[in-house]
Amino acid sequence: MATDAKDLTINYDEDGTLLVKELDKEILSKGAWTTIIFRYKDLNRSTREFGPDKYTIRRYQKLKGQYLPKSKFNISSKAQAQKIVEALNRWISEE
Image (cartoon, rainbow, N blue to C red):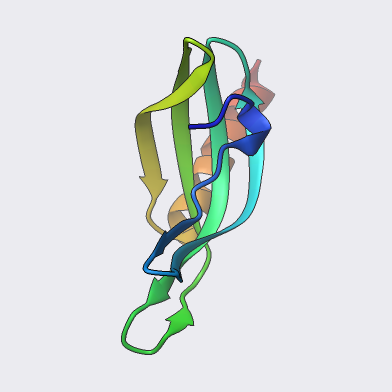
């Protein structure tokens, strides 16, 4: 487990094969509870190629100097991501 938020990753491999490739991340909040949004791709095991960009928001709790995963929300598509952006922009502009 990571001891610094910038070291948290969603890269995942099995038997030396990278199955989830992190492309980028943005730390949204940092502290005892840290929130990070990641952009990533999954490997299609049959074609051995990475699929389209995906997004996930992860929450971590720092206990005894280690970040522990607590919750996640996967954004299912670019269309859903766009709707989230549009709703947030609309709400922010209303303030």
